[in-house]
Length: 461
Image (cartoon, rainbow, N blue to C red; front, side, top):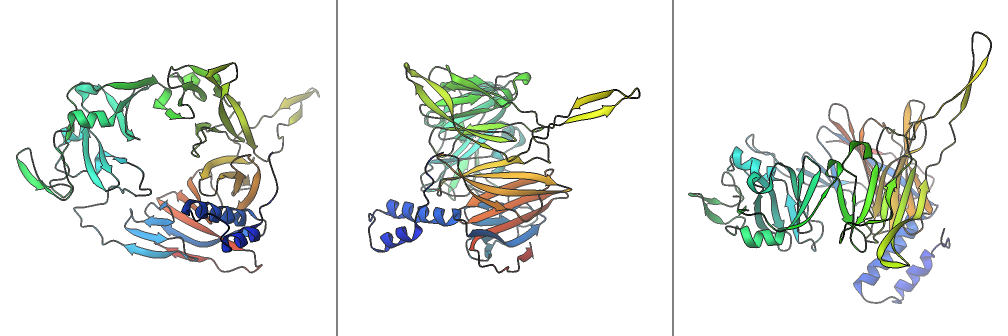
C-alpha cells in the first residue's frame, strides 16, 4: 500500500525557518502545502461545523467564496467565521443576472460561455443559430459570438468550447471536433471590443451594453476542417491520458454502463480497454480522466472507486493497456442473506435476498473529488441509519489510495436531495437543495481538538 511513515511537521517548520529550502516561490509553496496536508490528516485535527445558512436562491462556491442571490452577494469562507465581502445593488425589473464568469487562473487562454448571456439585440432566429460567446482571460477581452449555422453543421443539439476546440453534438450521438483558432482566422467578420462603439447591421451602439449587446461576429460560411468525430451514447465523450486517449460508451442503450478507452491517434481499443463495473444499482457508475494530470482514470461505482493507469505494453510500445492502480472499497457487511419460509404443507423453502449495490442501508459512494493542492482524493460515503442518512468525507492518499482521514458530517443526508461537497485546503463545504427551492450551506473548518464545543453560528440569506 505504499509508505506509512508520517511526516514530521515540526521538522519541516524548523527547516523552513532556517532557510533550508530553495528561495524559489514554487518550492516554498509546495513545502507549505505539504505541511498543511500533514496537519489536515493528523489524528488530533478535527473539522468543525462553524457556520450554517439557508437561502431561497441557489448557493454557489468557488475558491473560498460563497455566492448567494445569483452571485449578487459574496461571502468569504477563509476567515474563522464567514464574512460578507460585498453585495451588489439589486437589478431593475427589466434586468437580471443570467450567469457569471469566474476568473480562477491566469493561464487559461479562452472561456466559452452560453449564448443565453448576450443581450436582447439578437433576434429569436439568430439566437437559435448562435453558439458560445468566447472571451480571452489575460488580458480580459471579447473574442466574439460564434454562429452555429444549420446549413453548415446540420441539426445540432448542443455546442461548447474547451481548450481551443469547438465541440458539436448531435441527437444521434455523434460528436465532432473543430479547431476554434482556424474558425476565427477564417470566418471572423469584425473584431469587437467590450465597451467600445461599434456599427453593426446599420445600428450603432456600445459592445456589451443593452440594448446593443454583442453582435454575432463569427459566421461560418463553409464547413471548417474536421479534426475528429466519434459516436457515443448520450454524446458522452472525454479526452485525456498520456498519450492521448478518449472514453466513450458504444451508441446503444443496452451498452449503458460500458466504457471503451481508445487511442486518439488511430481509434484502437486499449488492451483491457473495455471497463464495466459489475454492479446492480439504481444510479449509474461514472468514469473520467483523473484531474491530477497523471493520465490515470477514475471509475466510480456505488461500492468501489477504481483508479486505473494507462501504460505501454512491453512487447508493443505503440499499444497501451489499462490496469488497476488501486481500489477503494466501501465499508460493508455481506447482507445477501438466505431466508427460510414454511409452506402450508410444512415444507421449508430457502429464498435468497439480494440487495442493490446502492441500497441506502449500505455505505454507498456519492461524490469523488480531487484536492489538487494537497494531493488528496476526497470521497463522500453515505449510509441510511433508521430514517436518517449520515455521511462522512474520507481523505485518501492520491498515490496509493490509503485512507488518511475521515470526517463525519453532522447534518443529515437525504439521498433524494441534490448535494455538492467541496474540500478546499482547510475547508469543507456542503451545499444541498431541498424541496421548494430551499438551499442550505454547511461550512466546516479545520480546528485543533481542544475538547470544547463552541456554538455553531446560524444565519439566513
